Amino acid sequence: MRLAPAALLASVGSSACVALLLAAGLIGCSKSTPEQPAAKGPAATGGKAAGGGEGRSKTGADAFVFAIQGEPETLDPGRSHGVNETKVVQNLFEGLTEYPLGNGEMVPGVAERWTLDPDGRTYTFHLRKDAKWSNGEPVTAEDFRWSWVRVLNPKLASPYADMLFVLDGARDLYEGRATDPATVGVEVVDPHTLKVRLAYVAPYFLELLAYPTFRPVHRATVEQHGDRWTRPANIVGNGPYRLVEWSPQQHLKLVKNKHYWDTDEVAIARVTILPIEENTTMVNLFESGELDWSGAVDLPAIKIKQLRRRKDYHEDPYHGVYFYRFNVQHPALKDVKVRRALAKAVDREAIIEVLKSGHRVATTYVPPMPGYTPADSDLAFDPDAARKLLAEAGYPEGRGFPRLTVLYNTQENHKRVAEMVQQMWARTLGIEISLQNQEWKVYLNSQKQLAYEISRSGWIGDYHDPSTFLSMWTTGNGNNNTGWSDREYDGLISKANHEADAAARLDILRRAEALLLSRGPVMPLYHYARPYLLNPAVKGFEPHLLDLHPVKYIRKSP
Image (cartoon, rainbow, N blue to C red; front, side, top):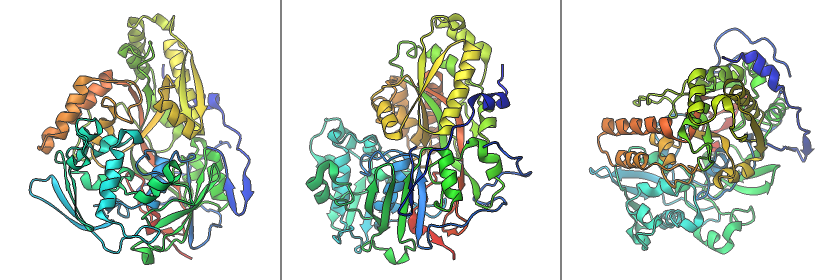
C-alpha cells in the first residue's frame, strides 16, 4: 500500500529549534512551523528567483557568510572528501585548473595554459610565475608532484587516493607493486612546467585537477607541523583566501590572501563559514540577516512551500543522488534478496511529495546526464515483490528478522526521510527498524569503520561523467564503506577506464550500473535538486551542477 504523504508528515512531526548563541557578531550552532499555502506557479529554476519579501542583510558589503552542514572533518586537501570540506578547501587552495563561474569549461588556475598530445594521455601544464603561497613563496611544479605522491602513500589514508589512479603508474605505487615515486607519470620539467602522463584517456581529467585531492599542499608546513598543519596558526595555502580563525562548532573565518596571483580581482575581503546542523536554525539565521547563502545546509522540508514565494529562494539542478547504503558484513544484509526486498518496499514518490524540494524519484544510481542512458532497474515500489523476496530470504512476513538500525547525520530532513522509510518497512514487510543520528564527523567515522547496519548517504558528482558515481563501489575504494566486493563489477569499471571509444565506454558503465542495482549495497531514493536561499545583493553566483561557487567570483551590490 502506498503511504499518504500527509499521514507521513503528521507522523514525523517537527523538531524544536536549538538556541542561538550570539557572540561578537557571529552565531554558532550545532548540525520545522506549519506551512502556509504555496504561491501558484512553477518553482524557481536555473538560478531565477521567485517572488516575495525578505529582511536586510547584516553581513557587510565586503563580507560573505554561508553555512555548511557540520564541522569539517579536515581541511587537508589530500584527505578531504565531503561537501562540507570541499566548500572550505576550494577557497584556501587552488589547483592547476579551477571551476568556472557557473557551468562551463574549466578555467586556468595555477596553470595559465596547457597542451594535450595527440595520444590523448599526455598533458603539459605551464604554471603562472606569479602564483604564490600565502607566505609569499612561489608555487612550483614540484609542489604538485610532491602533493600527489603524498596522496598515494597509504599511510595518509586518503579516501580519494584512487582518484589519482588516472595517473600512469599511480596505482602500482599505491598498492606496493612499485616503490619509486618516479615511476608515476608526473614529471617536473622545470619550476613552472609540469608534464603529466595518464594511465588511460580521461576526458574529465581537467575537472579532476580542480578537486581538492589534486590541489597542492605546502611541503615544509606539512613536514614541520604534521597533523596540526591545517590549524590557523600554521596553515599555508595558495588560494584566494587564508584561514585566520577556526572555532570548532562555531565558525571558520577567512580573509583575502594578499599573495594570491589574482587578489586584485577578489572583491570579498572576509568570509565566515558557520557549521549548522539544524535546517530551521539555518533559515532563522538567514532571515535575521546573519547569512548570505544557505550553503550546504538543506532547507527544511516543511517550509519549502512558503520559502518558494520569496525573491531570495532559488532551485537549481544538482548532480547527485540520495541513497541508503547497506553494510553487507551484517548476516541479514549479506543476502542480496534482503537488500532488494528493502529497496522495493520503499515508496519514493511519497518521500518526494513530502520533501517538496524539486528532487526526482531515483530507482537508478547515476543521475541523468547528457550522453548517458541510465541502466535498467527493477527497484521501483512493489510491495508484493518485496514481501516475496523477504520470504525467500527466510523471513516470511518479517518473522525472525533482526532489528536493524538506520544511521543518519543530524539534520531534520534526514530524520524525516528515515522515519518515513522506517514506517514503510514496518507496514510492507512487518519488520521493526531503529533510528540513530550522529554529528557529521562521528557519522563519517562510523561509515568508515563499518560501525553501522544501514546508513543514510548522499553522493555529489566530482566531475561530469558516470564514472564519478560508479568507481566508488570498486573493491577497496575509500568511499565504498559497505564491505561489498564484486569481481565482475571491478572488471567492468577497469574495462571502461581503458576503453578509448566514447560510446563503448558508456555502454560498459551502463552494464556496471545495472550490476550495482541488481546485487550491490545501495538503495537509491532520489536524485537531487538544489533549493537554497541567497542574499539578493550577491552577484557573481550562477547555477552549477556540482553546487560549486568559489567566493573569488562573488560581489555584492550596495
